Length: 246
Length: 246
Image 1 (cartoon, helix red, strand yellow):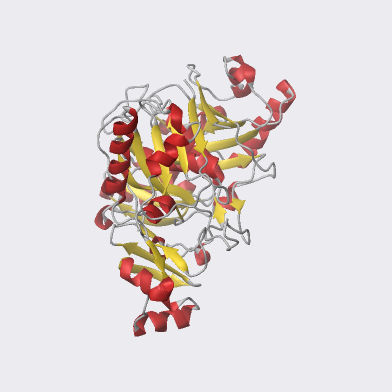
Image 2 (cartoon, each protein chain N blue to C red):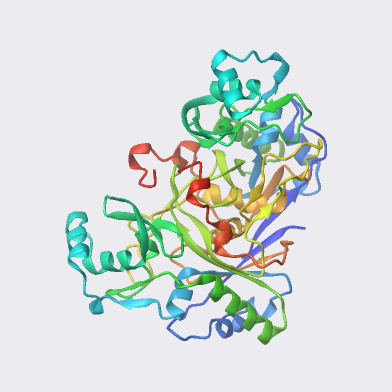
């Protein structure tokens, strides 16, 4: 059966406390949600809904942030936010800070984003996007009776390859990774591929129907048979000591 | 409109010189190819079709390959193939060699793969997967009159994150990357996201319908509006000096 990826348009700008599930269920395709659908929400609407939209005029940058900002030609308030969100800085260059966030994510500018917002504001990543996904999944179950999975998606750069792709930053109701360890191929040989990051692949697939300038913050992935284990972000984060690429 | 990803099953084991387009066009969905479809082929069938399947009994490992093989508990013939395919070794550990291939790809074991083949054989990556994709695209045009795009996909690991995902190793008839540089968001601010690696996202999306033990080496991606420029692998490879993540 063919996989379907359905874009869900929501033209209203999401604000703190908005009922995202109600907004979803009002849409044409949201009304037709089925058991086994996977709902992919962008980081941006989750952050806005959860109050992770920050008024930059209220940020008082430290001397460190001001110094970095001046050296890298950045807004010191943004640098302050990046430092606050960062566990470990990996690289600073060309106005971009690559860091590992407190969530364990490695990304540019600690995931802080000023796009698709009025001037003077920025969003931080959701504090715990696994919890955000679980909350949405439970609410969808309550309102519709349907068992779905929910993934929160964000657009990150990566080493070695040009261009950004979408990856999962929060997962609920689906395994993050399919483990093929020990499974055999068509010739009864152990597979080279041991684990596929399906949550990341689902986010990348959803990005294709979303674009960046449209009001399409949700996608419905249909006809994908998945393991209903409770995946989480942590399953997708490689421990440094096991990361041969680093 | 929703995006559709259609798996194409081909149960025959592909051999050198096989007519992949004829095999595709014999299938139920292959018969219904439309203008604007994107056809994603796995590396494995392209390598087999192009004679990149290597009989290991014919490989004579050098002293260097034998030494590495003994230290890393690998087959010295496989190590020899990896060294032959490698421009630059990045890391060797736990029986895995991460290297940059002559194509510029950074991956484990230089993309050499022993799965889904009889014992004693391995596939190398296609010599020039952009050319492979172009050839398939032209042949599909000749046989069906349809204008499609073709992408060759392989499953690679990546730094920072667990699990492998599919990425493009060859592209024809579609831009590899969408450039949003200078475009404005809904609030007329310049977008944070500057370029999306759509060819990689399309490969990841296709992996979802394929699985690893099934005979599904081709996927048709339908209803994705794309820029018909001629993308190529090189557009997806980040030059080391510009790679902040490295």
